[in-house]
Image 1 (cartoon, rainbow, N blue to C red):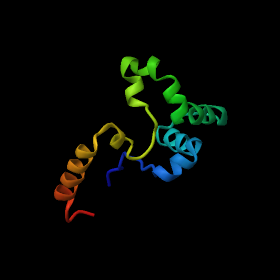
Image 2: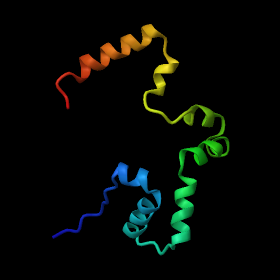
Image 3: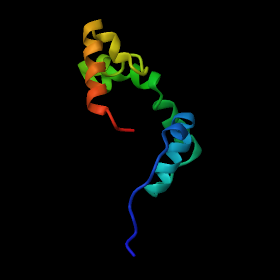
Length: 98
């Protein structure tokens, strides 16, 4: 039987414990890392840390890519009419999906 070469990561687990997510990835990739490495990954992968370095890592697009980190923040960029139009389109195209 062929060995499958993939790994699953649960967003709630990784979000709640980024060091654990780093450990899972490290194990899957057969990397030899220590606790200090995992904590470093956890600290550098927070939204705040990524936002602070966004100009270095993403240049002029950094501020656009890392705004607030909230769900549905895109709606603040649209007018009321734009939001209504998008809501209508979402309802039409996603009707019957779960």
